[in-house]
Figure 1 (cartoon, helix red, strand yellow):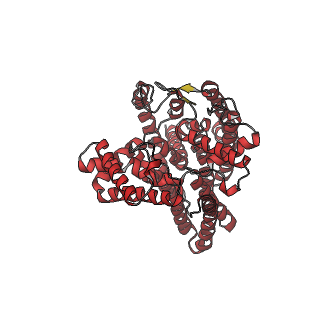
Figure 2 (cartoon, one colour):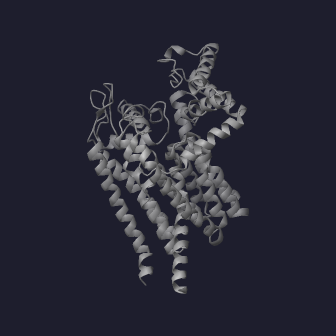
Figure 3 (cartoon, helix red, strand yellow):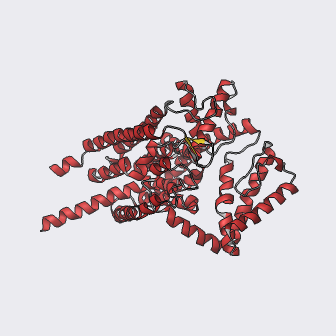
Amino acid sequence: MINHKIYSKLSINIVLILSFLLSISLSFHYLSKYDKLIQIEDTLELIHPMLKSSPGNHWLEADEIINDIKNKKNFFEYGSDYDEFLPQRILALYYYISDQTIYDQNGNLRTDNGKFLYLILKTLLFYLALFYFAHKITKILPTKNCFFIILFLAIEPTIFQFHSSFFNESLFFPLQILLLTYLVSSPTNLFSNFVTGIILGLMFSVSVESFYLIIPIILFQLLTFKKKSFKIIFSCIFGFIFVLSIITFHNYKRTNNIFFMNDGAKTALYLYIAPNILSISKEISNDKAQSIMNTQKFEWLKKNKINISLFKNKTFSHIGFIDNEVDRLKYYNYLQYAALNIIIKNPLSTAKFIFKKNLHTLVLNPFFIKNFHKFDTVNGKLAYYKSETHTNEIPYRITYTIVLYIIMLIGIFYSFKNINKILAFSLLILAIYPVFVLGWMGANRYFVPSLIYLSIFFGNGMACILNRQILKTKLE
């Protein structure tokens, strides 16, 4: 009777409410401590501890969009070049409606300007999606399994920490939860599958790396619905294309060119993987490899009469900015081609590099956001990487990762025996997907979305372990 009460729908709802309140408390704590401007070591530059790196870029882009709105530009012309399409537009909408400014008169990020409410709204979106998922999954799986699945998604620290940050993951997770809901419920009506396509499109608008996620979803639909799958797949693709069409039309109105994939997707391979592979294959230093690629880049720019005067400097990491959209797209296509050319011609070096980086990617880091806020810079004396804190945390991270993976492995075996095998197979493919598209970065943050899909295996694994313990006690 006690066991039944612990693993009930009521207890699941209590977990959701308490974890939501806990997340809000953590957000309040971080903002109280880090919503301020600090000076970078050895410079006069001021930064915001919570808005460094990519989160800071989105706030800058959001400010540009707000200015475009005030200048009464056409909706489809808002903003300029972007890494992702949706996050900065949501942020701009929030600040436009709340009538607060992002930057002060000196060009510095403002503090105490509505960030807390913004974090609350994002967190609420996640837990509403999780509540809907819980409502659906309790009709399909045993309540005990559901309890541990929801518990994992609600409080697992590697996921939980992002609710109190301004990283894109906090917008991406709710969409993943909705996609997971679709997979476990497998609706056959066309509208639901059209909405699923829209969800996939929105996922792409938050993270361009998720573009190919539609492939495993189509495979799932084909295997699940068989003869009925044609209309279902078409509905899903139509929803996906609908979102891509909006992004494409926006880019066309803004640049007079037709494209939906941003420049960042074309430069990532060039900046982060190609020089490492060239270094391994030619047995030269990474700096030497970058120098070779840099020389080839400027030779290409000169040959194709691209205006190189717009480069601030000629270092490898500085891609430059080109106003002419035709030249810019041509240039970024070259960067993508140059990177792929190195990767394809050196398969062994590529495999060696990617394997090493993937090992780093797969080690979970529940301390990421805390340290991102705490440490001032990416490089230098006050950087997290290679710091004493980083070194001391590694044993805890490895132990935590191993424990979770063991439970999930048990859950995988359980799932293939006790639930829909097509669903279990699809969840594994979706979980592995980030490793294929971003594992070469070696950043464990990019593997966190995989935990959303692996939650099913964690819940099944925990239930399996507990059931065996109960069985053993009864026999004794």
